[in-house]
Image 1 (cartoon, rainbow, N blue to C red):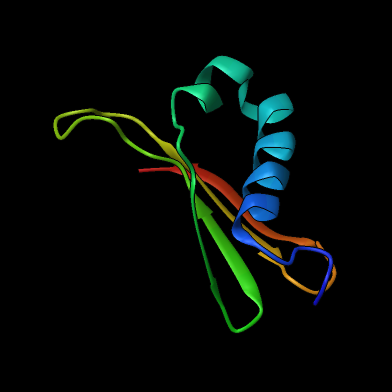
Image 2 (image 1 turned 90 degrees about the horizontal axis):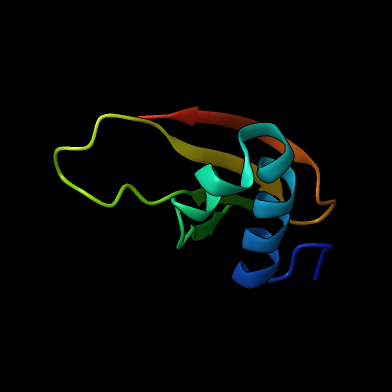
Length: 76
């Protein structure tokens, strides 16, 4: 089953890790986060809320089995 068994857990981890780095206001503005799992890795993406927005969104990958952060950036 792993330490990160579902989307809700993956999103909670991503939020908890990203807030101290990028700020609560920034992360709240990118909600809802989307999470998909492929080959044992969760990919969590922030949401850009407008077509003409210029800015960045969260991209994080978390290992499902061990909960290890494999990748983290804040990009377009």
